[in-house]
Amino acid sequence: MTLSYLRNLLFLLDLFVVLVHSEDLNATGEAITTRFWDCCKPSCSWTGKASFSHPVDTCNATDDPIADFVTGTGCGTGGSAYTCSNQHPWSVNDTLSYGYAGIFLLNHPDTEAFWCCSCYQLDFTSDPLKGKSMIVQASNTAFDINTANRFSLAIPGGNTTSHDGCAKQYGVQESVFGQTNSGVASVDDCDNLPDNLQDSCRWRFDWFKDALYPTVNFKRVVCPTDLTDKTGCIRTDEKAFADGQTSAASAPSSTSPLFAGLAAVLACLVLV
Image (tube, rainbow, N blue to C red; front, side, top):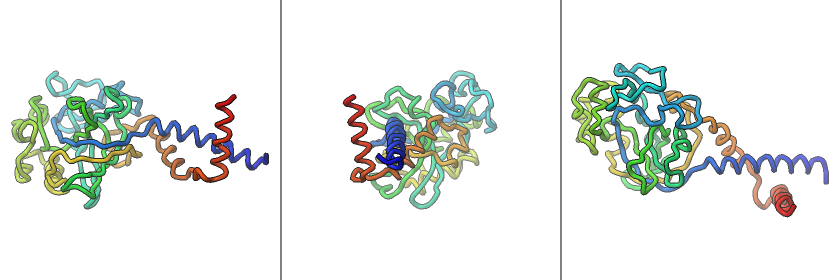
């Protein structure tokens, strides 16, 4: 066995380890989408939810970042932490948008540690959004529906709740943000929202076509810095996931001699 062959074999063994670990971090499937904007402190803004650089950034009532991650939510507990207004959706072009979402994954129930601050590409599979995609960062959770994979898109004016979080944060009537479970009724109602949320409210009626519960195919992807710059949250497994995606893209074909050699070595290891 030549030295060159041994080196290639060791490379493949290292590649195999990377690919196996990356596979553990992957998440793909079909999902439904809903929408929300309740202004509350996002679930992934609490410490200890996952292994990350730090939790998702929160803001106070004047939309200034809060440095203390243990600050309570402004929804119902007397705290002062709310969703920052910049954690909203925006269009990159006619067929791609970025944004944030609360999510639930069936294969990882009750496991925020798996999804908090990870990013997912959502390819829409239902009209009127077929052919469009979003890349979202998981900043929140969506445990209230746990019978399907779900991405609840954070859209100002897209939905509101009885928590009165938006009323407390912005000093307005909660009705400004629309009705519970539906949000504002028309694009004209977006004019009533705080100035820093109006454009993203209009995004719902423009790019998003005011779609109701559109379905998607989803897969985990490397987070764009445009998303992580707004939350400050980067998972500690992000580099391993990114390395795995790069390795998978450059991995040898299953018909190559080197791959066959790897398979033979692994078979021998199993038999030892």
